[in-house]
Image (cartoon, rainbow, N blue to C red):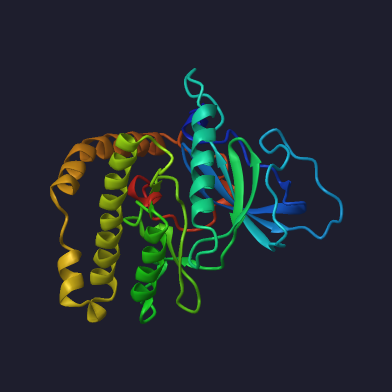
Length: 293
C-alpha cells in the first residue's frame, strides 16, 4: 500500500535547515526548531567550540551585519525563499526579513526585545536567544508580570512602533525571574517619517490604532491569567474591542476556518508533515488547532 506524498510546499523550507552556520564571525550548530510554517522556519542554534568558520549552505550566504557581542545561543529565522505552485516567493521572504530588521533597529537597546545579531542572507537573519517560556505554557503568572509587560509596550510605542501580534500568547515570553520578552515582529508596524506627508499621516493613525490594540490584548490576557491584579480601568480596556476590531474578526473568520479545515485534512491524510518534525520536540498550541492531538 503506497503512502501519500508529503506536502512540503506548505512549509518555508523543503528540508532541515543547515546543521552548522556562521553568524557575526561565530560558528553555531543547530539544536532545535521552534516553529516551521508556510512563511518561515525559526530555529535555535548554539555556539560551537570550533575555532574555524563553517561553510555556509545556499540558504545562508555571507554575513551582512555583524555584532561585537558573543552570543552563546541565537535564534535564526529562515523566511520563505522557495516557489509555491510556480509562483516565485523569494521576494516576500526578503521583504519580511527587511521589515523585521528595520523594526529591531528601531527598538535597539530596549529591555524586553531580543538583540539583533546579524543578517545572514537576503531572506535569513539571527537574533539573540533569551532563555524564557511562552506565556501559554504558564499555569500561574509571576506577580507583577503584566505591569512589567505594560512598561515594555510603553517603550516600544514611544519608539513609534506598534507590536500588532499580542493576541498570540506564544509570542510573549516569561523569563524565570518574571521578566517579559516579546518575539516575532513580522506584522509589527512603525511610523514612517520619511514618507510624503499624506502617507505619513495615514501610517501614523494606523500605528496609533494598533498600539491601542496592543494594550487591549495585554489586559485581555491579564484578565484571564491574573484577574486578582486587574483594576477597573484595565478591565474596561480589556473588553473594548471597537468597530474595526469586530469587523476584522468577521472578515477573517471564514478564512481561518477554511485554512484550518484544509490543514486538518492534509494532516489526517498524512501529507502535512513538517520537514523538520524531528527537531520540533515541544508543544505548539497553534498547531493543536488542526492536529488530532
